[in-house]
Image (cartoon, rainbow, N blue to C red; front, side, top):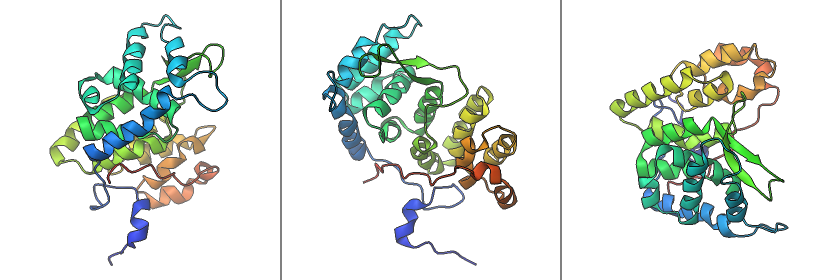
Length: 260
């Protein structure tokens, strides 16, 4: 039996390599628009704030002696003059720091699709994996001095939905590129705790990783923290039995498309 999905519902179906026709590849034209959409919030003062994001992040460039001041400055310079050429020339570390800043500028920023369109999915995967270990800190409050830092805790600062663009890109890859992406992902998963590792599993729905992570997650005190994997796991029996994971499960918000 063949299941036909109505056109108006196709945008809500998360892609799989085993389900052709649902992966949406971003374009450079759309990436340029998204870059402008995010960047316009960098220099603009926010309502009720005395400073712009540019001033607030500038105050935090040397706020911590952790060896990342140069990278913070590079990411700050990127958002001060963003361009597709700047995306092409930046290193992975700078792009990862810039990705964290992007979500401070605009909560629904889709900087990942910009990287996919300009650099390809392999680099985007490396950026997102690095960003799993980054977050924000502040001195004197988040409207005064904010900076990107490396975080040691088990929680990720990235929502699972932020990985949807890279999932689209991975599901649209050639077999050769997918094999390379899989090796990168395996190496990154070995270095991560479950809550971070599960986000990588979300981007690879045709692997068994979602099932493995869900089985491990059922023993967690807060299993709903990886509940987003319920829509990625291909084991129907496991999904039905994972009631503890569904305590606070909500629908995965649609990520802004950069395909048009």
